[in-house]
Length: 488
Ligand SMILES: Nc1ncnc2c1ncn2[C@@H]1O[C@H](COP(=O)(O)OP(=O)(O)OP(=O)(O)O)[C@@H](O)[C@H]1O
Image (cartoon, rainbow, N blue to C red; front, side, top):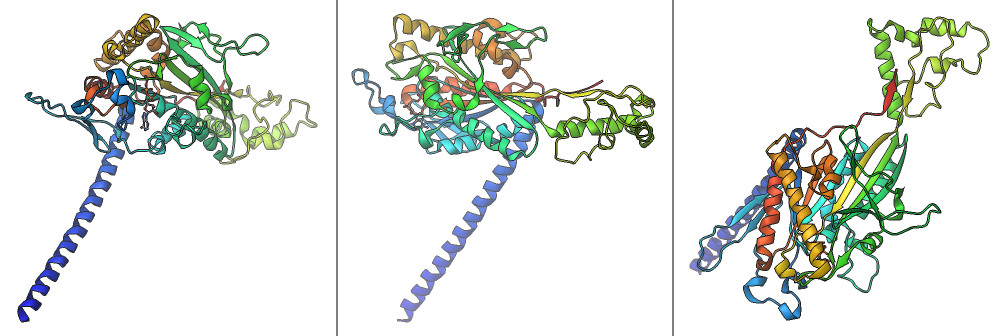
């Protein structure tokens, strides 16, 4: 009996030890999580400072397309899961083959999503870029990956998983989510006015096609070919591109998919045959701009080097007031003492009337030009191995155009990474069109999409390599657009 008691006590003691170890393991895991988060924040700040391209990677789940069509169905080791998201910033690729000594490969990115991550979780990591857009930065999010790796699912969304529903529902991708989020952010800004327009372009067989083109009567004409030009300031532009109020298309994934060139291949039944570029242009007239104008004026008023800018001084105001009845162009006393810079209401137009005061030196004329920022959302066509996709004729030509434009994109990133004096943007319409976002001062996020199975190992390694090279590109730090105030 006493032996039994001793044993029970011993087991209890062990249980207590196990409990304590489990608690300390949990604490350790939590510490690790916090540390990783802190490291990520620091890393992101560094990325921002250096103007690096951010790269997020999404490994999709194993899908029926990994098996292939019946005639060419693959089985066995080809279906093995060899690409894994091991944690939130690391991808592990198991390259081992029987009889070969190739080591596993590890790739690190700013964020890695595994097969279980929802559309919402993916969008959550992209959301801060939309705030940046309203804060005056141009932003570009570009999905890159081999055919069938999940780019369209990530950028636009899909409803294949629920064929009964025509709505994309919770499978909505970054483009419709970004359009909705933009409106939400705008509605939270109490002052100023913002308009959002959308343009939709596809690069198909190295031609730029405007998918929202209309004739003179405003009737949709279907895709119309456009040029890409380099402006006098060195930026790229598509003249005559159609723009529409945003709700129309960017928020309707079905509309985007329907307009785009698609063909079935042996790898992917709904393969996109073009690069799709949706651009949201936000034009802001913000009250902050006026507040800045006031600050600018008062600083000039205080500056001894700018005596002519003293129009807002009390002396000047008194004289102006002593001039008897005011004419149409005279200033009211509230105009002479504008509200404090923190005032949130937008004055009707304190800066629009010319000064008629005899004491005043020429009144600084301040006009507010709208601030224009752009969000470019790019769903690239997938790179493909022609042997695997079994294409021929026109579809083969499409494939070769896709592969050529993607290799032009790779060359551009290579030239930027090596800081070569010449960057070959004009080698393809795609890179020419995206020039300002890839090499300019926009915040650029590459969303790498990869397939998990052995069958697509070579293509996945190619995509992961592309992502690693993109991370090495160091551009000028993203630049905030000026408020658009003109002070003369
Ligand atoms: N994360 C995911 N979760 C669920 N289904 C996914 C996911 N990623 C992709 N899919 C599904 O896999 C299939 C292929 O994806 P998708 O069409 O997005 O590929 P893609 O990279 O755009 O191909 P392509 O370049 O040929 O157009 C689709 O049926 C899509 O719904």
